[in-house]
Length: 214
Image (tube, rainbow, N blue to C red; front, top):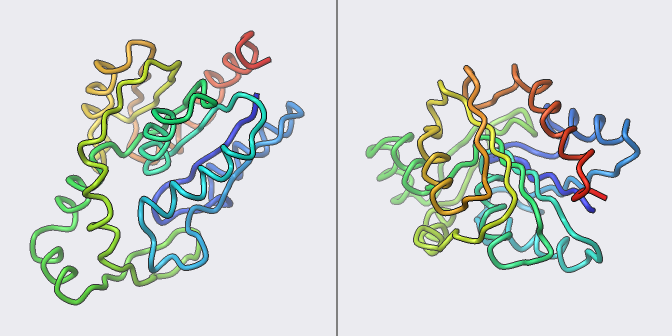
C-alpha cells in the first residue's frame, strides 16, 4: 500500500499536518509521499493543476494507494478516487467539498467582484508565510468540478470539526449518503483540527494495522 498526503489550500507539504504525518509514518517504517500541490507558480493555481500533479503520482504507482487529504486536499482526493481504481482508500480531514460555492461565500460579494474585475487577489499563504497574489482563474476552473459525481463506494475515514466555520461539517454528512463505505468522526474543533491530530493518528494507526494496508 502506498500513502499520499494532499495538503490544503494556501498550505504545503511541510506545514504542521504534513510534517506530523510524515514523521508518524516514518516511525512505522512507511514512506509518506507529500507532493507540493502549489506547483511552480502558486499565483496560477487551479484545481486542474493540482489534480494533474496527483495524477502523475498515481500513474507512477504500482501498488494500491491510500489518499490522505486535508481541506482542499480532501476535496481533490474524492474525484481522483472516483476515476482511479488504484486508489482503494481515503482519509479525509475537513474535506472542502463545494469549494467554489463556499470560497465565494467566505470572501463576500464585494471582494469577489473586485477579484473578478482585476483578476488578482492577495491571499495569506501558510507554507510561504506571506501574502501571495492569486489569479481569478482558479474560480473559472473550479466551475467544471461543481457537478462532478462522487459516488464511488470506497473505504473512507473522515474527520471534521463541529465548530468548522470554513467548511461546515454538514458537507461531510452529505458525502456519507453517496458513499456507504465512508465513516465520519466529529470532533469539538475548528477547521484545522490541529488540536485533535493525535486522536486522528490513533484512528489512522488502526487502519495501518488492518489487512487492507498490507
